[in-house]
Image 1 (tube, one colour):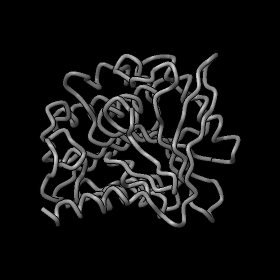
Image 2 (tube, helix red, strand yellow):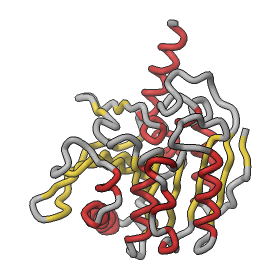
Image 3 (cartoon, one colour):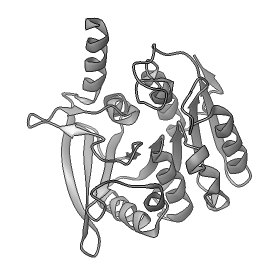
Image 4 (cartoon, helix red, strand yellow):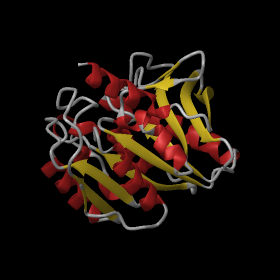
Length: 264
């Protein structure tokens, strides 16, 4: 049991890096509405590529920053932030806006209000010199990334990344995917046992997207023995044990290299 707990603690600390500038920022997005987001940037790298993270669940408490600046989080994107920063990216993890303090449900993730919030964040990043911006969703956060990709037309927005995309109850293919013109990368674990994140359904979503835009799809195998339920973060659904390999696929794809069809 000691080794199991130690593994989890180490994973939670992956986002704590001595070379990153880390802070929680607040911006105004809509009249009377503000939105917090966690900003983590390489200390000595000029602004270039920014990744906007949409963790799963309802987005509440996806991360926690201590008074000493240590960031903890269970979600794949949050706990892998250090790996993304090591690859030269700045990462910005979205929290629910002030008018949705209890979280972002499916309806809000597919709403004009959500689009307005993220458009404001993109504008904020553009003003700070970021030349390329990518939306990265994990689990239920893929609803945000995919919907926003159909809606936002900002010139600095360059691609959509969907990891462990949700299907079934939230059925990603109900979105107007034919309006998504940006290139898409999908990464999905072959053994994902989460009932709303079927691997076969993800392949059907890939087919739907391929009708109108370029889609790369990477099938993930392997990893560590799960330490959570099938839809939890420390399972195949959260790429538990293969986080670094998945980050490398994403980083290479952003860098212009074709994603592998399979990684082990």
